[in-house]
Image 1 (cartoon, rainbow, N blue to C red):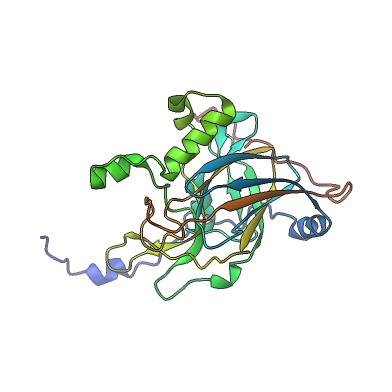
Image 2 (image 1 turned 120 degrees about the vertical axis):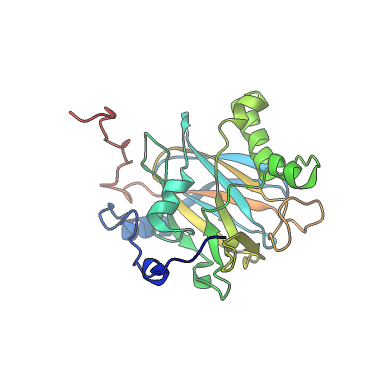
Length: 282
């Protein structure tokens, strides 16, 4: 134990400063996206079975919707540039720019050195949820994904249907890679439909039953050509545990929509970050 200093209250009272003010970010053209989506046609659908993962492809300038066709179900989403697995979703920077949870108008950013928007959230049927009395919100970029290593650390048991393993198997099959090589590309996720926060007393990451119901969805605009990998979490709605054969689980659907010609005139895919990469002063 250490003694509390005399100026403890003054130190705690120092006002916080936002680390990455985002008011200089180029805003997505949401009105143009909404107009394009209004007449877009479904072109592909992928069903993700419970406790499994599947890959899907989205062309830049298209929309994709993740939905719950049968009931509340959390999904763990990885995104890659379609032709470059080294460029992947950067949950940490997305979190630093927008906060612990994301919503309509927020963008999913790719990792360094690319650091460009991969997708923009354009619609969310759970936008009404906001923040509950526990500090819970929906669609987090906090959690890393359930994985067999942490499961073994805490229980001493092997469990192979964690989201990490699901994503690994799906990517390996899609890209025809050995499991070990595919695993190296799996990264921290967007936890779609998951309701999470931090406890006020210990600051621990918590989850609670997802407020999603059959028919709920979140929708994105693909800013670049994407390869997505989505796992239907073995925790179902994650109301009790997230690595389980006992939880009630449901499938997820991914539906891709292509806008009509001319709806995106003037829009262009973002280029890679323009930092010089010299990493040294002149």
